[in-house]
Length: 151
Image (cartoon, rainbow, N blue to C red; front, side):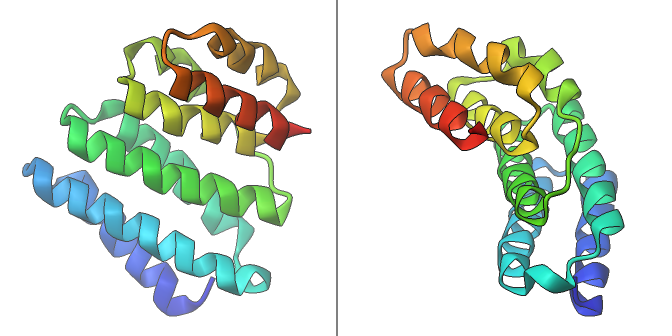
């Protein structure tokens, strides 16, 4: 990850940690997601230790977030970070996300299923399979896609 991206990522994470304004937290999360998406273009230069730290921090912030818009933005950023980790062959532990699945809205659940898929942890396939019979056809489709991603 380029040094300017590292500084920007750290700045946005600090904004998330300290802002009392949910819309400010959502904006910071969106900017983190965009930054991580841009970073995919520079895949060889991504520092794995920083990526691992970012995943842990974003996951923690997402699970503590009380504002639905900010939480959805954080989960979107976490999908981007997870995708980047997957592309780098880096494993991460999404267990905290699994523990919170029952608390997520349908939109948040979509992100969570992708995060589980990008973790490449085969022990979470059974968790994803639970959603193949979800009442929402969209969630069922995403669960199928997530299982395909894990293959």
